[in-house]
Length: 116
Length: 272
Image 1 (spheres, rainbow over the protein chains, first blue to last red):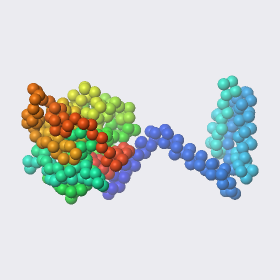
Image 2: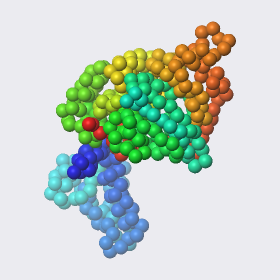
Image 3: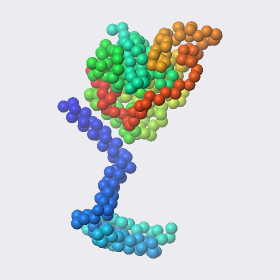
Image 4: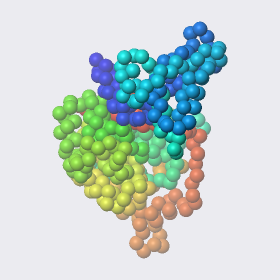
């Protein structure tokens, strides 16, 4: 019984530490996704990740935003499939709605960068 | 029981390196026992052995009447350790740290709260108790570290360089606090490089060198050993006994890394 109590205390302490460490949280969530995509690129198969639905809100008036959007749209993995299926949105709010409705699973935001 | 600690022929080896070489000494009840020595002399290793963090290679020791090899749990129930390295979690508040260490030591939440309140107030840390420990200065961390070691109200307190790197104000607060604790009957082993601190606090002092006890006596008697100095200090005694050459010793072991380990040392103390 005492072991269970100790385990509970240690788990509680570890979780508190975890949620307060931004870097650890980012690593915990982003790294597996990154690794999945990376492995999918290197070893493409029938089951590898392709045609991932993502949303883009291109709020850039210049050419850089447009070029970046095209680059993401045309990104191929090595078996010639598209890595992403891009759906265009007008603003970030529309993207949030898209995620809620499960139209897209990823977000790429092209910000106003041409003037930089 | 007159002696809180009895050490007999204690030896600790790391492969061929003899860190502690056949030492024997006693610490009386209510005594502050100073433990001095150059770097690598074996002070911290002795403290680790006595606090059951390391097993001795040969010899025996009793803490609070319990054998450090055969009755580790009983020993841990009776000791507190203020180690060189601060045993606290930076991403927890002082309250959360104390609550964690208290709970892991089988203490009731009310008791943890009562004792934390008492010691935090005494060490002027009450208003900081809800801030993350990582945001504290070294002095503040050390004061919380002392409170953590005192949560279980130990009979023997092991202090491994408790005022290392602290400003004079915090050092004074901690020294006065240790004197106050000693008056309440807590025995202490104080390992330090600060000769003034040992002179101020310790009733008896052992000077350890090359893993062996080179001298053991009261501060006054040790000072009488120094010839040719009008008013010898403890530093004169120390240099007379251990020499003036610099010691560089690599034990071949990496220092223990990471934060505090719930399975080791004071974290596994039990409240009676």
